[in-house]
Length: 190
Image 1 (cartoon, helix red, strand yellow):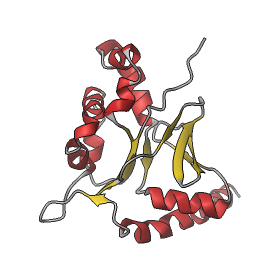
Image 2 (image 1 turned 180 degrees about the vertical axis):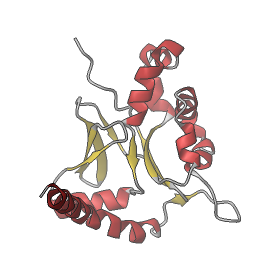
Image 3 (image 1 turned 90 degrees about the vertical axis):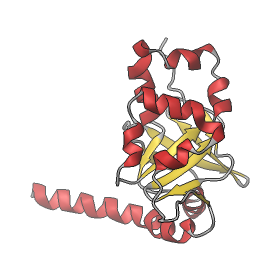
Image 4 (image 1 turned 45 degrees about the vertical axis):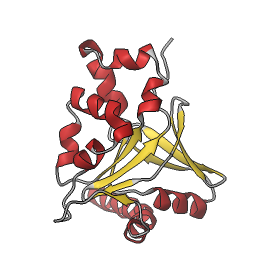
């Protein structure tokens, strides 16, 4: 009986993701900025490292020891706050880079990573098809919600922080970088 329930749950989960998966193959060809070498093999780590306005994020990923995720074969979507987003945090952003803050930094960054290859166009299509916000689970086991305000795609976390998807997405052989204009900070306890 338990095996039948597990099988049914897996089938429902797969069916729920099919609209996003089927849209991915169509959307990738709609011209996001693709970072490729002549042999066509560029990882998310390489693509991210080539972005002038994401150096703070690159440093944070290195400090958190998460950067190796983006060199492997697994596919991820990185919600990537740009340098201006980190600057807007002021001293709080600088403090995140200190060794004693590493657990918090890791938690914040894991909640900016989605498993799989999801483009802004795929997300926008899912929001349109659903007729409202779409919620996804992050690598940190948190939830983020994508919405549209006019033609602008926004993302928010369960703590109420929100950001806009800005600029051009960056496609690599193992995922997508979605530039954000803010860091999705967790809700402060207090």
